Image (cartoon, rainbow, N blue to C red; front, top):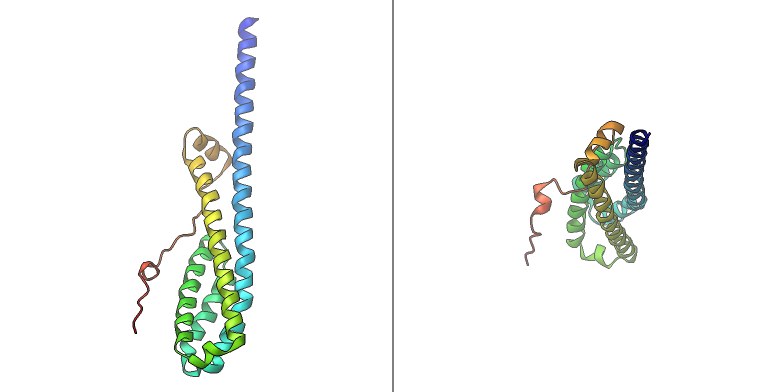
Length: 184
């Protein structure tokens, strides 16, 4: 009788632990999805703003069409990404092309004096700051999830229930890691 009670208590403790561990994974997975969705909202704002920004620059910098086409192409690729991994890679490319567009705008004094351009540039910079903050939050939540997925005994639960590592937003392009060259 006592042995049966001890076995029952052990089974109940293990069951409660399994439920708690599983629920912890579900909570972190949902936080990862929520963080990605919050970032997605900022990315959508940027997608909507880029065509206006490009059109404004296009009016002043007609011979910079290659740069403008790269920005639009990168925007379209990022918008049409189907997986998180694709989205992360395409967003990194888009960020790089936007930097080149900012550099083009510096070469045109008339453009820098245009009020509409300045407002668009200000909005785009604020959105970029929102995106950076969203990426930090997303990476923090994903880091917790990935750590729990890999550490014992969480890795056993993750394996049993199919929880897999999630990708981090990180700079993959070596050119983006370089310091910006400023010359006068």
